[in-house]
Image 1: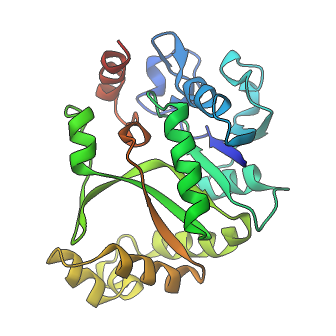
Image 2: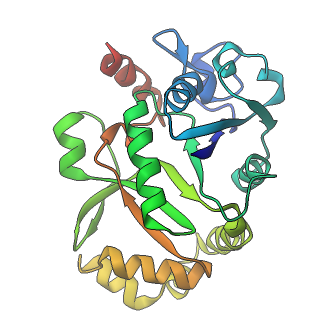
Amino acid sequence: MLDAVVLAGGPLDAVARLQPGAPNKAFVEIAGVALVGRVVRALRASPRVRRIIVVAPLSEAAHSALSDADEVRPDGVHITESLRNGLRGLDGSSDALVAASDLPVLTSAAVDDFADRVGALDADIAYGCVEKHVHLRRYPDVPHTWAHLRDGTFCGGGLFGMKPRVLPMLERFIEQLGAARKHPFRLASLFGWDMLLRYALRRLTIAQAEARAKELLGAPARAAISPYPETAVNVDRVSDVELARKLLR
């Protein structure tokens, strides 16, 4: 069984402004239930999840959407701070399940499957993703940014697994990525020109990406390819809200 951390912090963006009083998009209601509440329900219904920790504004600690959570902890200014708060006190060598709070159609079956994959991979970081043909078969109207690899075409998901001990390495990498994001040459030097060329030519394999991630992070990182496309259906834009309502109907 895994402890689960739900990241329900973030700014008052355009999605959040649709819901009067919502501090961020996690508390926007879809068909009468806040987004974060739908995620917490799916986690609670999974026999693979032991404890649920929600990282959110403490002003929302008594919100009905969080009633199934075991603990509410304060969010941070940056996602790394929120993640640190959520993982605090957990066994550093045991897998934790980290979930985004904007997955409106997440199911307990998807959580079960992903938790099993995280355990089987035996990695410090397991990044959730979904293959394009799997996604389009179920949700053809949900848009995504796709990564074209030699093994197939994938989008990122809203679940990932990690051992808390790797957080300092992950934070350093996120800092490096943030510093380089507006400088193409610095980004290239971070990931390697060979990797960028392989990706541009669609010759980059998952195994090669995993090997480079291990070099960058100093810890084993693996792709956890989910057959459940609902793990990758999220709400990023205002238009996604109505789309999510249609899916739930």
